[in-house]
Length: 97
Image 1 (tube, rainbow, N blue to C red):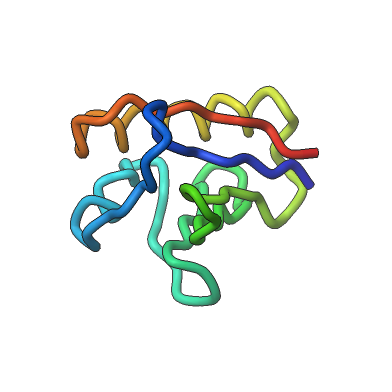
Image 2: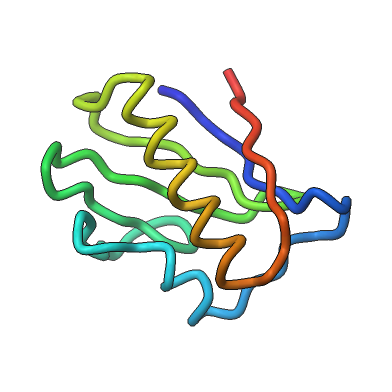
């Protein structure tokens, strides 16, 4: 299971209002109830993208096992891009193995 950290480039904590966090989903995902700040079911694969607090940003990981590492990286990069656009902060994605 791959895991990633999304954090601000400037070293400050990534604090998000619920509406900003909700903006990371697209039509490729269905919101799902459960553990974490936000759970998104990837419609095409059935895997769940879990997003939760992890100082100094957000930890993102996948449940299900259908997505390969490249697909997971692409999904997390898209989430980071949408977070950066919604917050106005430059963010970095760090793979955690």
